Image (cartoon, rainbow, N blue to C red; front, side):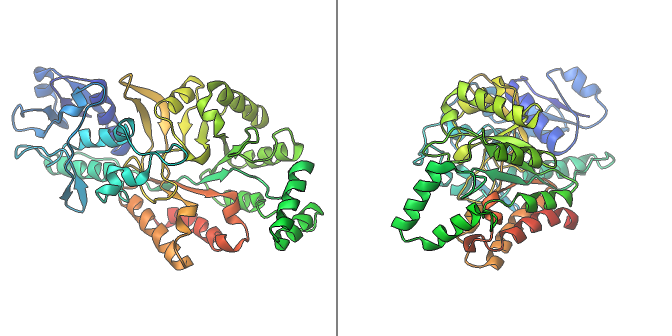
Length: 433
């Protein structure tokens, strides 16, 4: 066990030390304000305060973990070995930067509570983030810092056996629309037909009626392939189905259709199923509650995971609603047009509510790649190289790689050519680690 002496134990201090030490490094950690207890401890120990007590491992603490609420923080990011760091310490410190305060800043999404630019959907813009501006978005810096901390401790406590963790993948499959032509109902089918003819999309018209006649599989119906891939893996995919009402933003199949219910049940027999919260439900607790109950009635088990339509987050309201509904995991946090680590980590972490200054039971699983972000790469080889670079960053710290793919990105449409192979590469990366 690692014993940490600090001049004041705050919820922020407790939260971040548990994440760095226990969740990433696998070390039990305890905090104390007692000098006597600290001196008597005969295993791993460090002080996290303004001045060292003696010759122990010491990191000079930044004020962030002892504050409450939000304040204007002056951040200067600097080069540090093969990564970046901020919140510098001093010459007595065992590390040149206070990785605990810096990690808390990133994990709590502190910058997203401050005034910021939003896009047309009301989302935080990735190009405005500290990680993007300072060039460390594509590194899981929190995990890298944790390993640098581990190396420094190991140099001092060479006899201590540090546990190791293994690289994992958590495939996320988004289903905003289960079928492109099928199961749409008479009105939507008629409207689609008129659009095809008006825009002279004769190929779409032809495909639509081949599908409706049962002569061709719907292009978005890739679920047999998904289930086949799931059967080949020891770990579970998580598939998020949108079941909310039809709207400007959400256009999936009506949940009252037997074929759609049957599809969700068949996928749930093999994969983990979660709720894709509809766009308008994000502003309504009652609508989210209704969608959660509907999904639970389909899969016949308590819903544990959710993901928001359009990857939109309203912090902290979105997460507070999920906590009240006893949803255990969220998979929304990430950027749809940028590859990388929005919260600076590839390790799931608990949501910390900055307004209430409390760690919550909701686990945040950030995604690191959104399939459409790879469409800007001209060739399949370029896409593979981008994907591999990202996976390699996660492998270096034995973290969990979480990409988002859609059911339609496994179709035979030209723009998604090669995406089945990319998904297979993700699955195979576990055996290569």
